[in-house]
Length: 176
Image 1: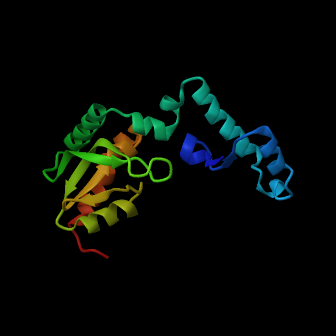
Image 2: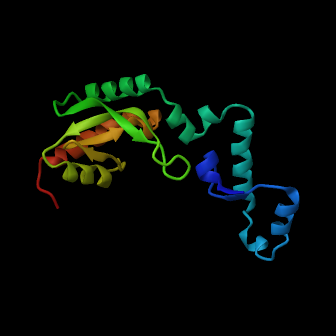
Image 3: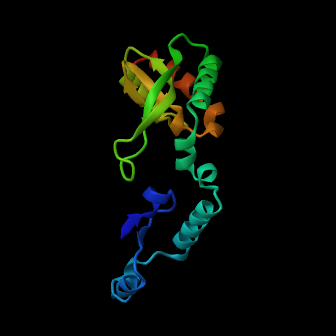
């Protein structure tokens, strides 16, 4: 069996082969194996990731699992706090749905919360957010820009209002 280290376990990008020892050994003896084997850094990162599963810490320590495990109520609180800090009529907290991922969880969604910014030209606002420092990635839904907090590390919450404020100020002017 083959699978992706980053998609399946949330670790480094690595192709993983697992199976009966005799079959894996046959692959290991192939001349291409030397060219395809991972370096020590990838192996160390993969080992560290797998140890997190073994100790039961994966959900708390691996970013993708931390994002998937985030409770909708916590995301709602964060969205409301960020909207309140901005105190702008066009910025609000909004319930949304997150797509988990295409590689290992295709088509899977879960409830989430976003900071939604109503805009007459959401495409222009989204571009200003992407071009800002730091870059902020969102999506457009219902004529608003949605910043799904399931994909924002809580440690970045304090810098999000300033990034939004800068993009909103720029949105009032002409577009490039």
